[in-house]
Image (cartoon, rainbow, N blue to C red; front, top):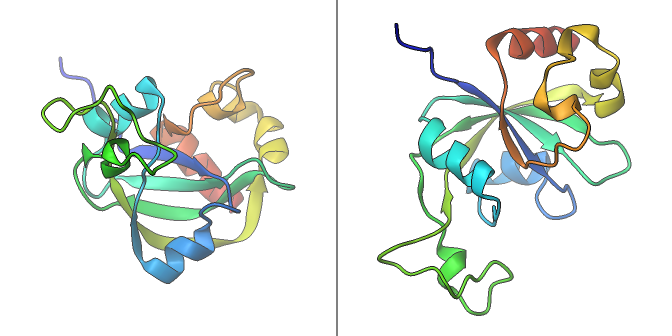
Length: 155
């Protein structure tokens, strides 16, 4: 028996750094600067071109899901890890053995409203979703098909 692969994700970004507006304006962007191994593994090993992504604004007045993006490329080495001038430079990472990967995402749509974290936490149906569990700070995480469909109905 084979397990169904994950095809829905949630990616967090601080809107002061990179917002849904920025993605819409640019059309497509590299999701760089991820420096958590589990989040990196999700991008490297799990994400595939065409997978859908909830775009989530974090660390702001009203954190929540603001729209949808789509994975546009397979994972490749994050160039910022090699740049000594970058905040994301990693002196232990080499071009022959890169430590950090990224995918590019493209804009799909913006929601008419923010589906706030507080609202998501109030939904009994989403109790098992990683985002609403206490202590989860991952910037990239899988979203089950059921949770994806449920959240779309909230939009």
